[in-house]
Length: 400
Ligand code: HEM
Image 1 (tube, protein in one colour):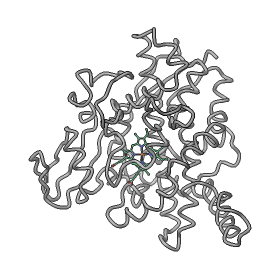
Image 2: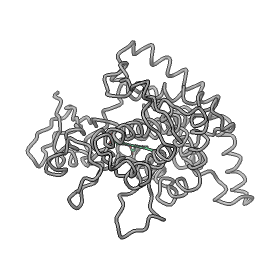
Image 3: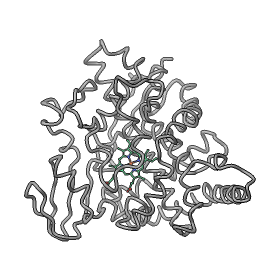
Image 4: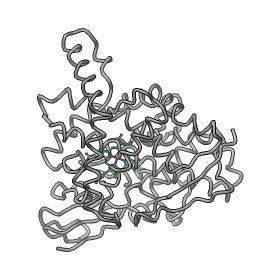
């Protein structure tokens, strides 16, 4: 058994699309990730994906971005604006988690900062499950702790939401309410389709916990890095300062460019279920582990130019090359939340009025509209509890 590292875009695309390669990134994180969408394979994956695709459509994303998210952003950011400062790592996770909670179906009936903190503590445990292969402490103890956390999360945040949705479903079936009165979230979709795709309570709980982290953690990591990259960019290009504070498309391009350069998940990994020879000649044997090195793939000079290693929100791209590279994957497991997270690349013949910006750019815009800048007294620190390059602390202040 060998580990095959893929660094070229064509090889990466071919691997993503090969159905005899099976997810290998979450083998250690079974406690949450065991049977969730990203870990399913073949027919089981196809059925669950088809179900969840019903919700993750562009018209739903528009209604999230225009109607549902603005209030959640306002409610999450308000206490920090009042204080005049924030620590971006925690704040970004809380914000993105609250947005992901709305799409997953985790009700937050109180809508208070205190409730956000309680849900946030659970999400931090679920993130540890997804990144357990990189964990440097005692893994067995951590798994036990995460299982307990999942059960407590269920009692505190899922139980009532499931009862509420089942009651709504009964009302809908009795013709007392309309389709549009049902919540637009994954929990609703799963409960509504129990006859076609039955899932027991533990499995539903894992799927919702996974969605919370799939939507929350990836977007929060990107959120923090985009703001950092923009701070650095305007330090070197002071003439662009007003773009950062006024131009939504600049913020969206900065988001796409950051996600290309620093993919939220820096690798994808697959187990080979059969022998494969890629068109480039690379041989993969059954049982090999294939690792797609997204940082290398996304810095390919032929696709992204000689300065591919650097952040450049004004990068010109050849036709057909996506500005985020392969950071959202491709093929059967391609990110279901991509358009929701970063919107669509803008084409000048379209109008800004019906442009989908994506929740990360929209959240970043809120920060810049409120005059975010690095806290001059407290420089950022890296997180040393993991081998991945995450910020540990990123203090900022708001200047209104
Ligand atoms: C910057 C934000 C995001 C990034 C960089 C990102 C990245 C990715 C990547 C690379 C994959 C594929 C993994 C693989 O092939 O092994 C993926 C899958 C997935 N993502 Fe995202 N994601 C983001 C935001 C979101 C959001 C907002 C949601 C949901 C609200 C979401 C839900 C999912 C789900 C459910 C899958 C599994 C799809 C499947 O296996 O069929 N992601 N994401």
